[in-house]
Length: 189
Image 1 (cartoon, rainbow, N blue to C red):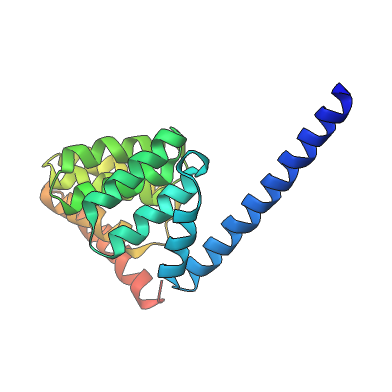
Image 2 (image 1 turned 180 degrees about the horizontal axis):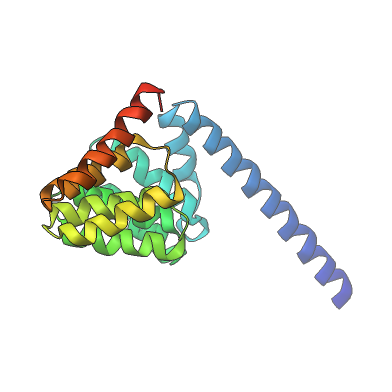
């Protein structure tokens, strides 16, 4: 009898998992197709205690797109509460803090994003931007270096490093990175 109950439990959990995967796939497709309202309604149909960090993140993205930054911030924090190593939620939270002119809070969020995904070039780039906004130019420089080290084909990375060198009165280095920026722009990167 215990074997049958265990087998039934496994089968039910497998079906629920497959249903949840299918629902999440549908939500992601709707979101990618910019069918935001239907994606959000499907997300709301998932009981809160069963939502994944990705579900909370998508809800936050939708709310942020609608200009509801405080509600989006809440959703990103729920994503982090669901998975404390979910770097995307820290990154998006940092973006909100930057919009709210809270660079020190953004710095803390971006630091966690790159801690949990050390290969996330845009995390380092935005961390550099937050340091610039906070007046910490030397720290910004190192973050832009890290971003470029991970992906040297993004023109903005080079431009902001050039700007940082300009602020540090390092004209030669500023000129070098501005030339990289111009080359990437010319190639359409």
